[in-house]
Length: 230
Figure 1 (tube, rainbow, N blue to C red):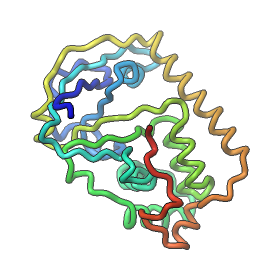
Figure 2 (figure 1 turned 90 degrees about the horizontal axis):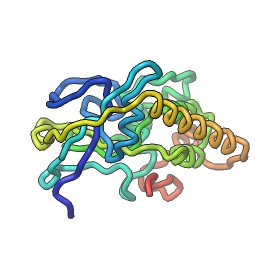
Figure 3 (figure 1 turned 60 degrees about the horizontal axis):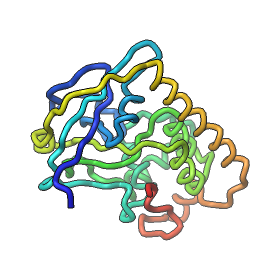
C-alpha cells in the first residue's frame, strides 16, 4: 500500500501552505481543502473564462490517516448524496424533497468529520443539477447513478482534519491557461448534459426518492447502486 500520494488543488491563487479551517462550509463534504489526483482536472477547476489559474501540487502522507472512500463498494450512491444534501444548498421545491433530505441524512448520512480525508465525486456544474433532480423526485436512483458517471466526472480528495493538513507538503505549481482548460471544462459539461438527456429519454421503472421513503429502504438494500466509481 502506498504511503504517499501526489495531489493537486486548482485555484486562482498559488497556495504554498493550506490553512486548516479556511474555505467554504457549504462545499460538497463541508469545510476542507479540495484536491484531485488528476492535474488536468485541477487545471479545469482553477480557471474561469477570464483568468488563468494555478494547479498547486502537494505530497500527502496517508500512512496514518483515517480515510473515507465513498467510491468503494462499502457505500452506496445514497451515502454520497446524503452527505451532499447535509452540506450543499439545494433548491427543495416540494414537500417530498424536504422529506427526502431528512430521510437521506437520517438513514444514509455519514459523519465526515470523523475522518482525516474524504474521497468521492465532486458535484459541480451539471452533476449538482442531477442530484437536485433526484431529491425533487424527477429521476430514479438508477438514473442518478448513471448520470454521475457521465462526462468522466472527477474524483476529489478532501483534506478534512488538522492532522491531515500537517501531512501535506507543498511541491510547486503549474499554470492553468484559461484558453485551454476553460474550454475543456465546458466540453465536459456539455457532453454530460447531452448524455443526461439521453438517459431521460429511457423510461425508468426504478426507485424514485418517494419510493425509497415509502418503502423505508436502508443502506443494505441491494436495489441501491453501489461503488459509483470504477
